[in-house]
Image 1 (cartoon, rainbow, N blue to C red):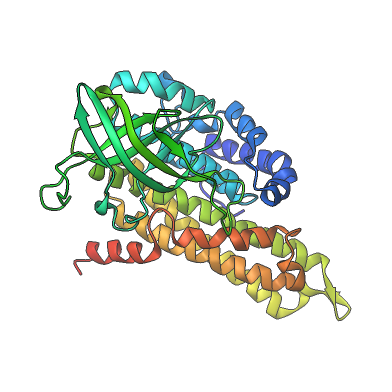
Image 2: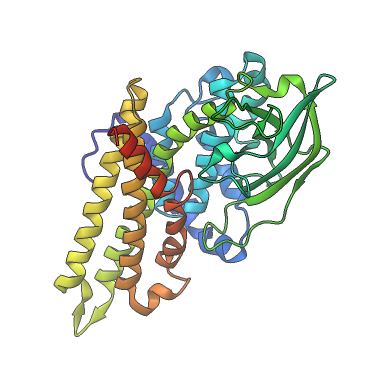
Length: 386
């Protein structure tokens, strides 16, 4: 690892999570990937370490850290297993963070302690079958009836929504009259739905290309009733608030992408030193060495980008453009490095017993989830006045 300029405390955290990833996550990653099973024992270990409470204040059961601390942990986990890394990222950034950022004090004290302790997982219900990049096209509706919100609609690709420790999902819903548009007077609000709830159906787990050990389901809400005090944040601000959550989330996903990219470098170096061809390790062949050098360069640039975006966010400076840049370059680095690592491994790279095969399958979603690469380019262009 290069000189990162981390504080002693940050470096200690990084090393602790790296050791956990090597000794606890790595030995079971292939099995959970093959079985498509949620790694409850790994999540329990992460909970014991306090990782789910990293960016939250101690008064709510957190560790008193910040976004950058969370990113460091996510990066180290993703070097070994992206499914575990996205479980942490989604649990903190998408499940608990909206409650911390926009919840009332009563809501924070009600829901955050269990989420910070890793005893429960929260989910973030924004995407719908007909509303992905166009999140303003939300069709899920919520009407206030006799002191309760009655919610109807469906959500798609929702992480951490179907585990046995999932306790809530915060959904965006249209609380304005039917047909209202979010950009022309329409109103989208955020509402916390406890799990389980009458009328909330968790669909079968998706059959995914990658992230096999990550829990992902569609949700259907049919006349789900929750108390009026389950409104999260100001009525009508749900869409804007969730966009703010996604801006920070892009930094965390960038950290995950960097971890995957670095994992591909790690595996390629080890393989190139051990694999022999034409009487010598393939690492001695310039084509292989140069390919790994390019992989390391991409990883370094991507890491620098997410460090910069995180520093801006923590300093209270504008960071939306930098977060989009970090997401764009880091996801591309992950995909490029996974492809290169697979090529270096040759036929073995196409075998699931080698970690690079899993990295290759896990990498593509990083150019899609939490804002596609095209959306990142759009955001960057807008910040440039284009």
